[in-house]
Image (cartoon, rainbow, N blue to C red; front, side):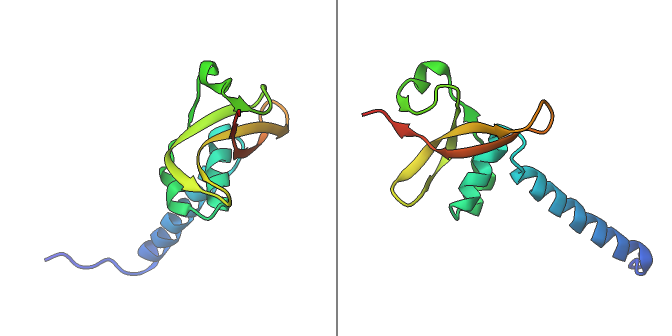
Length: 115
């Protein structure tokens, strides 16, 4: 029969795993890359599950022309639609706000189709 391990090792490993999980979640929503800016925007809209499961991917330039806004922005589509104040959203525009080569900061906002 195996004895249950108790003591210092198990307490330390619980703290270690807890810390690693927190770091992974923070890393997922830190907007240093455009896809994380998309996830952060979805989280700010109040949809944490959609933020984790969104799986944003960059849209090709041929479909970007159907959206109004900055042509330099990167457009990302998400697999899980979420709602904001005015409508359901599945495409977000991501703009580079500040930073240099390594530490870029991006902001995402819902894309608006051309009329």
